[in-house]
Figure (tube, rainbow, N blue to C red):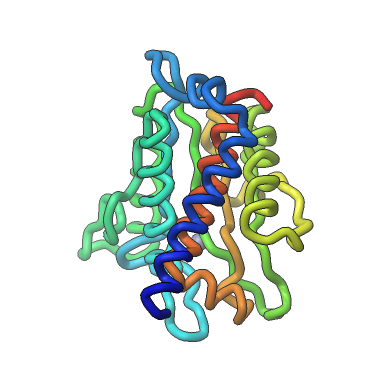
Length: 234
Ligand SMILES: [Zn+2]
């Protein structure tokens, strides 16, 4: 990418965020998720980390790094709009990792540590960020899955799904879906909780996008807009 293309790509991400946010309805939405003690805490979860790289793209890209890049941008942008946030992992490491333990025990410890962070947050709204991978490379597009334990999870998932389609991929006709109970956090958490699968590493075109930080900004703008729209009740 040359310097000019980079400059305008950055601007287009800002303009996209502004356009999406104008559609949210301005101050009302922001106030709903920000400010008072009762205001929710957006708990942002970058999936995987450390010993657990998640899905690997055909060029060797690890899901965990992209998840963290998107999550950090979600935190920064949400914070800019006054939303209280917490991160499960703030760096490349897994949580509660002990090199002396078998991988399976470390996976359980990691996921329980994430559960405890959500449990310690005031009025948590949990958004977990992941990437998809499938054997057939034709599938693409973000999809949001919601926990069955809180009615608002579905509302949040639908707001996120709509914003991701509108902002990142108008050809994406996927619908928000209930998460499988086999996914520990979706089964256990009782707060509004969703998993955002931001795209497919198994689709070559989407993998190229997912390797670009400009696309991480775009995804983050869509995710924050979806959260604000949910927070505004519309
Ligand atoms: Zn994942």
